[in-house]
Image 1 (cartoon, rainbow over the protein chains, first blue to last red):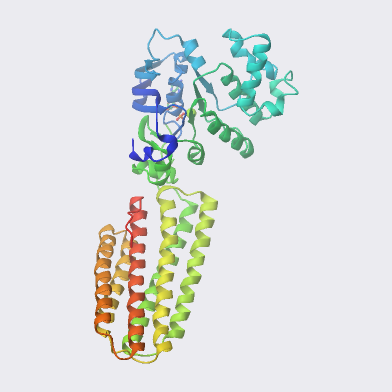
Image 2: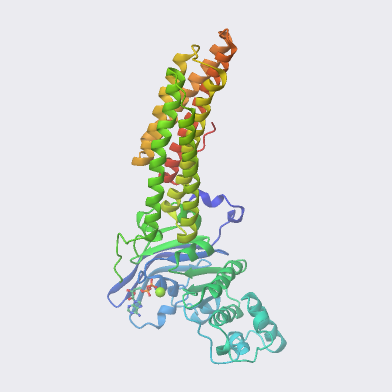
Length: 264
Length: 219
Ligand SMILES: Nc1ncnc2c1ncn2[C@@H]1O[C@H](COP(=O)(O)OP(=O)(O)O)[C@@H](O)[C@H]1O
Ligand SMILES: [Mg+2]
């Protein structure tokens, strides 16, 4: 990584949270990721961008083994979370997905109350009940910047919320199980600009306590929210650097052409 | 997998072309402005009005380049080489407008202090020649994205600085009898030295545009 990383005070110590090593993924005979290497830093926002179909979702879904549910999916290489390979067959996938939560493109709350949506995870993980659970729900909603908007109607259906609120509810739901990493796959693509701005500022505040990885096809969003940016192209990481460097002076011509809108 | 379509039509390109053509226009005016003022100093003739007009035009362009740049940033949020081109354009437009301003100052010297200056003519001629070449080279380096030529402008500046300092020492040791001759001469070489510095700034902006970073040298 560039020596510029050492410039900012914030960047004095960079700890790797997730290390992706020589990761290749196939769907049937089609290779979708080709030897991806990526050090995802703790308490930072890392953006993964690239043209559609380049493998962004596949990559992010590998980080909590969501691809396991796809029958013809084969994975090679390693993904170390806190130094431990999560692709190992002995890993408890349920526990992994608690540690590495996921927020999807379309807000997908359960057709239950706001409260129940957030309480769902902690309940099945046996994490809390009663007052403790109430507190956990409140804390999660606060962290997701939604509490003030819903505190008087926790019993109402989650589906009565606006799209942007539903997405923040999904973030609260992910936070409720006290994860270490939050993965977001194009979390704003179904939202209007105001709701998008809220999620973006949320991403930045979340990094205080979590490691955030966001897939986005919105370059300006990557530029706004992320500390590091990876540019993925045809299943390969073409460039990975400090976001400031990527958007000022990328070292790869393909990256440059992509972010300046010359293709993609 | 969706095919990447190269050479997409970009609205931003129209704006960038507009910036480039404004700079092109400014370059021509800046060169003729500086050369007219040096020539008038050496050969006589009052060019103050003409030079003033050109200098005002340059200033006007400089402001237009700034407005256009801000507009493009606001509308398109350009990044990478597009953004660097815009920043470099603003800085280059500033340097070009300064050429006009210093040329005007030179043209005013004789008007304010009286006729032809015999003292120090060779140095003014030599520094004028070198400075003009630096202006031409810096503009050419920008136009053709020529890093080597831009580097050469930096080197030429060292020679101009040397000529300037040596000349000041000469002035101290061999002052002319008429003090207005000394003042005219010293002001002129001083302005030329400043013009040369702006040629270096222009070259540096070009290097920044091409390399993505400023090489910092104090001048
Ligand atoms: N379940 C699947 N079965 C087969 N091919 C898939 C599957 N999911 C994704 N792909 C293919 O893998 C490639 C990468 O997809 P994806 O990771 O979703 O890209 P992105 O998120 O960058 O748009 C695409 O060509 C896509 O068609
Ligand atoms: Mg995707």
